[in-house]
Amino acid sequence: MSYSSEEETDISDSELDEYVDRCYEQLKDGSRKVKFSDEVYRCPYCPGKKKLVYALKDLLQHASDVGKGSQNRDIKHKGKHLGLVRYIKDDLAQEDLSSELAGLALEVPTGNGVSELFVWPWMGILANVDAEKSSRLKNDLAERGFDPVRVRLLSTGGYAVVEFKRDWSGFYRAIMFEKEFEVDRRGKKDYCASPHLADELYGWVARDDDYNLKGSLGEYLQKNGDLKTISDLVVDEKRKTGLLIANLSNTIQELRTRVDELESNYCKPPAADIHVASQKDEIQ
Image 1 (cartoon, rainbow, N blue to C red):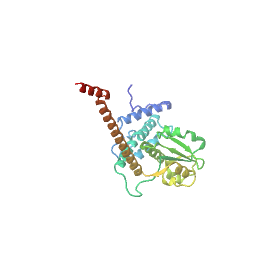
Image 2 (image 1 turned 180 degrees about the horizontal axis):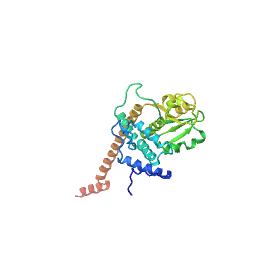
Image 3 (image 1 turned 135 degrees about the vertical axis):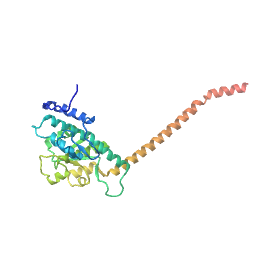
C-alpha cells in the first residue's frame, strides 16, 4: 500500500505514533532532504518559511517546538516534526558525533587543560527529581533513546545519577541526554540560574565541578567514578588494544609451537616400530 506524505487529512491521536514512524522512515531513506552540508540543515516540512537555514541544534529546537505544540495544531504537521526529532537524534546527531570521535581517535590532544574532565564511567545528573516519580525515570529515559544502565536516586538534594555504558556509545547517549535538556532550556546553566523551579527536571553530564562538590552528589560521584579526559580514555584504549594484540600474538606463537611439536611427533614412527625395524636389520 503506497503512502504519500502530502496527504493533509487529519488523523486521530491513536494513529500518531504510526504516522511518526512513517515520516521517520521517509527521512531515513532520503525521500525528504534535511542535510545540505556539514553546517546547513533545513526543515522539509516548512517550505513556506523561505526555506529557513538551521544549525543542527536549532533545527532540533524547531522540530521539538512544533512537535510539542498546541493540541489545536494539525496532528499530521506535529507527526512530521516528531519524526524529524527522532531522525535528528538517532541518525544525524549520531553521525556527526561519530565523525568527531573518529577525529579524536586520530589526533589525541596533548598538554594540560585542553580537554574537559568528565566523570568516568559516563554519568548524567538529574536535578529537581520528584522522589515519588523516580521509579519511572529509567524507563522514561530508555523510551527517549538514552539507554541508561541504571538510575540512582540520592538520599538528599533532589538529585539522581544516570549511569551510561562505558563505551563510546555510552558517551554518545550521555551527550545527547545533555543536549536534549539544553534544547529545552533545562541544562546545567539554566538550573544554576533557577535552581528552585521544582516542577522542572534538569539534566547534564557529570564533570569535574560536579565531582568536587560537597554533599551527597559529590560524594556519590567520588565513590563511584574517576575524572578523565577524552584523550586519557583514547590513550588508555590504545594501550589496552596494544596489550590485547601482544597477548594474542603470544598465544598464537604458543599454539604454533604446540602444532609443530604435534606434527613432529606425528611424523615419527612409534618406538615399537623402530625396535622391530632394528631387529630385522640385525637378522639380515
